[in-house]
Image 1 (tube, one colour):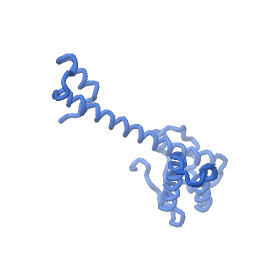
Image 2: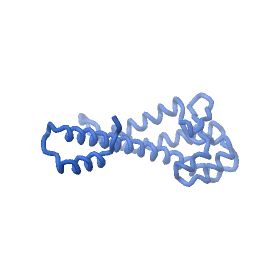
Image 3: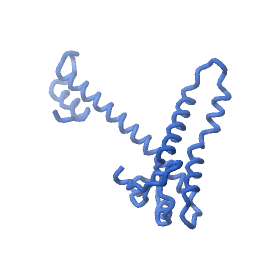
Image 4: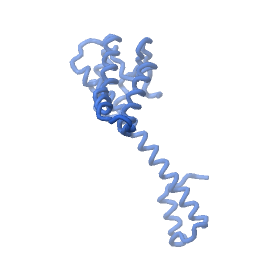
Length: 174
């Protein structure tokens, strides 16, 4: 069955008979399916945009910290930069912990922030996706990046973990 947008379905039904009257009507079921499909697509787009926003913030951080760099960074320096980025929320977490009264459940904001920090720590342990800062040409490309996803095609990415050597990845394939 072809997927039809909510607007198209509602327009066809209005044109056909004016409005939906009965709950058991076949057209009402069509309208319901179309609206559920529309909600699902909007939710997926929202989640995708949030993920892209986090990715852009991460890449922007590495663009800012490499502003005055004249030579490629060592793996130790790269790991230090990642550790700084991952631990940026530590003071806010501590503030939430100090403000919390004994016997009270933690705030939802605190739980969300704690989960975010734990996810980033786990990603750093297994392999943190970031621009390759061990290549000077790539650093120059990162400095020319204008903040859009389309211009990231020139920037090579790598996965850097706490212990293992970095693994270069092609961003266009991920």
